[in-house]
Image (cartoon, rainbow over all chains, first blue to last red; front, side, top):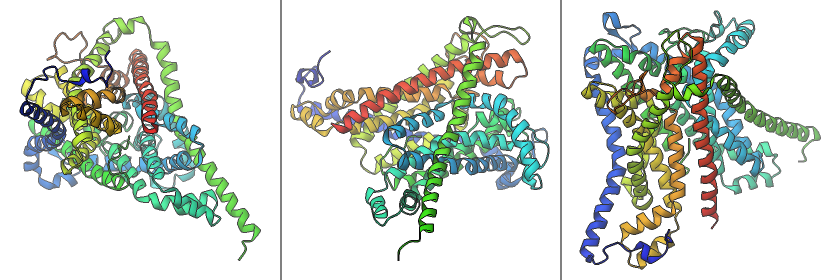
Length: 325
Length: 287
């Protein structure tokens, strides 16, 4: 193989071209690169246009009340998104409540406390969690996590906190709590790795100043580092929220897929993404398909907004950084 | 004002307690990882046999059979996705790294990240309306397109990162020798970044090979060997999903076997890419 830096390897095969030809070819190459870059913008626009077009029959028929109608009745062609929207938001909320404290702890430990070597290895391992395909997490959820919830966690919760409507009713295992927990497991590596990167951008002087006036390590983290990184950490959490809202397989497998709004976390629920996964290939009438596509459009627009906010918050710290998630 | 000993003790205790709590958070985060890996390996190994790799699925009621067609299907889909994701992703990444400092670059970067966050099921439905409806059938092509759309922004952003790490002196040296800009970009810049770009591609392949949702209404599923790209195609993930939610014990065993095969593939790609990538990036940054 010729060396990268040997000039003979670099010169174009037909170096007899005039300067004009070279300029033209450089221009064509530049145009190709630009076209590839611009294609993602066109793609996102195409997704939006295509979804709106396909959802149009449902949008015309149901209008904005689609969003707050509870009834979803394919037999009578009446479609409302509220139970699905509720399931999506509620499962994500449960996930955030479970995952954010843990993720912050992980990020603080890895960025501020652990020695460099330990931090590298542990970061690597925590990020492996993010690489587990969601369908495998769902399989584990069905056969390992849900039985554990049904036999251990939910009975314990209902014995101690059963007077709260949240923890009332029989333990099913499969349900909103299971959906939220599986989402929390997916959230931790994302939120903790982005938060860790955010904490690393906090200037050393910020820490040194706090240490210099006699603060303990926790006081340094709590008073000097976290306030500085607050915006970025909120961005990390919102980024994670964007993922949980659209997560499909693992949730579909453990949330129970029953369209209802119940105060109890033990009860089954249904998310937008799960409804799409289960019902789309079974939809028989045109209006049914169109209503499902309108659900997809709602989900798409929500995740676009959530992601845009998250990127904006995180980017203020590292304008061009690839925040791996 | 000197602090009282009690206050000092309290502050030290709080410090210790919070350190302990954050370490506990790390352990807590590792519990599901260990449990998932443990169960997949333990359950998968007992279910995995030679037939899994060589035979077709059996109908309900008959035990045995395998997922040979699904393994082939997954590889086909990855191949098709790469035909879209690699050229567009790599060239787009070079654009961002070399020319993307203006406003257009900012928009592309932003949209690529947003596209990365679009729910995969929505991508599936988009491709359904775009390809499956006009072709009037589910197909490997549609599945590959859906995965290709997911792969593009991932490859684009990692390529950009790696292209940016190439020292400006290399470009200047080549240009000073009279090498045209496009040749410099392809044969000096991109070539120097090759190892990093390949690791980025491996991560993207690992990610899409575990995707299920975008395949449900595009590649669909198939109990037999698919011979043409415009036919429905089985994949490990969709097959795993169908078997996991079915009420048959034998199918559950097969689902765990599929999980083990898929997980091995994803983890090997991930770990290799991260080990190689880390060394590459740290070497480049310190030089």
